[in-house]
Length: 310
Image (cartoon, rainbow, N blue to C red):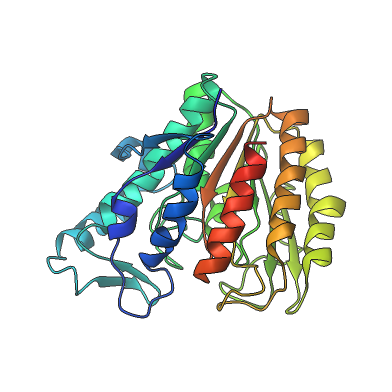
């Protein structure tokens, strides 16, 4: 039973202005990494999410606004900004919907026993998108939608999102904040965009934030997970684990100043696999988030995939 990799051509076509860090070259950097793992990973084309799947987290008022903005874009060289950091071009809505589609299809593969591990290599990312707001390069809240889809479609009660992106996933947290059966755990640099993620942001006891100071390295990063966040998730006993896999905590990343290295991502992935084996029958759905140094992104994603498939 091979792990499953979802991607779609639209992920490389999502348009942003010249010089934007969340650029198509991110997918180009990952392409050889994914090709090298073709014998271990079964590749599938991400389906495009339907409106009902998007509605699991986002209200119609927001969705129709995004559709309207997308309809105004005719020129791939002139994307439209939804907020100061978040842009949409002629192919962006398809890419974002395929990111959600990969997430939901990944839940399907896990819950029907087709695989125990799924990775979605899609862009734009999702963890900053709040229910009614595009933010931080993100249009739709992929991880939160995946959790709600798992509950609605398969009757799961407890789902956990583990987020090791260097930026706090305010969108996932906002979607989960008042729901005691959805758990969110995050390490992130603070202060840093988006400004949320303090340790005292606890929701209804289901939110676990472990902010890291600028300059913190792998020891602090792993300690946050091993001493605080993973024990909290073990106590929660989730039936499905979703990872927001951002690799921008890497020391080479240009958008932050943590000092995590590639091997630290491998170590944390091993720890998450052990947690999944203890709580969720090994089921892990990992979703690509950030990572803006192309070499660090490729190297870190490679070890993450290798440890997921070990």
